[in-house]
Image (tube, rainbow, N blue to C red; front, side, top):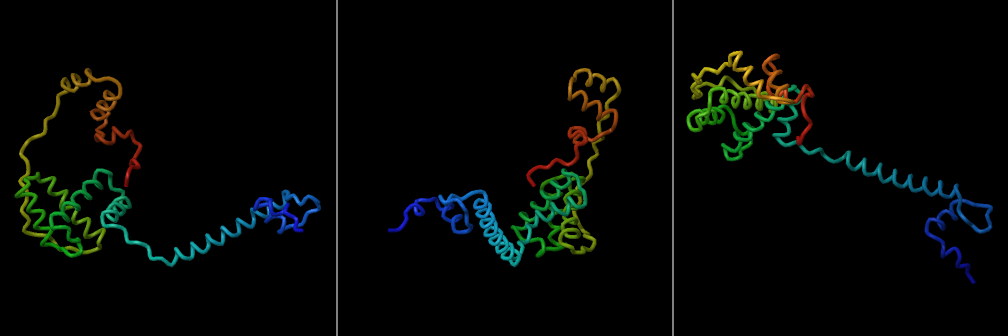
Length: 212
């Protein structure tokens, strides 16, 4: 008659009893068996891991999307976060304007058409039109690595003739008196040191790590 005590043992216990010998007549697995078992499992897992790594190394890496490439190049060149977002936005509008054609299929004529449309139809300012043109030149020259000739015959937006409003010292003091806490600190830094708005808001922490 077969001994059924070994059959009632847990799977790990039966495995350990066959992988090492023990002087214990009750055939209980001890520290050596547990270590043996863990090493055996570790070797199996490492074998599977090496197989997966070999399989993944043979797979072709997917090409990043165009706008992701734009973000990567912008960060390599240490563009500010606002410039990066503006460039991505204008490049996306450029693609949608030409019915989602890839920029590789377009050239100077499509750029001229889009930039002129911004000035004539949407009535944007001259500075905004310059930002849009700079974004497209950045896309072709730095991301797609295509040399573009000088783009002539672009309908330029008329520059604004409105003069900026400059506060007097009394007006600045009247504003600062009505502020307190963090807003007062930020306004004082903007007025006294000439910091930009986002530089003062971020407090010198640099580029925030967000969703991109």
